[in-house]
Length: 206
Image (cartoon, rainbow, N blue to C red; front, top):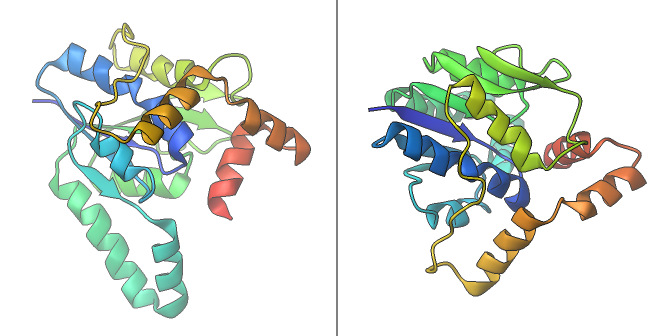
């Protein structure tokens, strides 16, 4: 049984752009387990999506607060979080964190196949990578679906499936992000004189 971890620690829009990966992985591998690493705000939506198993919740502010209060407690939390990932024995991680630190920790957690987008050298610990200059010439979903080709998985499903049990407001938000080409992000990024992908990463790091 194939065990896959998808890691995206950004906001709801970017996380939803990764959801079509799930249907394609399940279609290709049948009984595959597909879990996620996501932040606390996006976890409820992910839990409402068919075929997603366990959601490992990573909340950056909690780690930052512990780092300020106690390096020992911070280290314990990091070891606990990635220890749970290691115990899950994932075969592959689709890493959309754009983080060298996460890449290193996924490697140390024993995930042998680490697939992702290499943006400005951040993919140094990826075993399979696609180099990009940013999200500029096509929809973000298409960039993520390109990663399936590195795993020999056909990208035949290009839309996310969201259960009707989610709140109407959540479904509306999900559909909006999946249909639009994130113009608000592009405008905000242009205002700050940043590339859209840099803007998303920097917003998370604030």
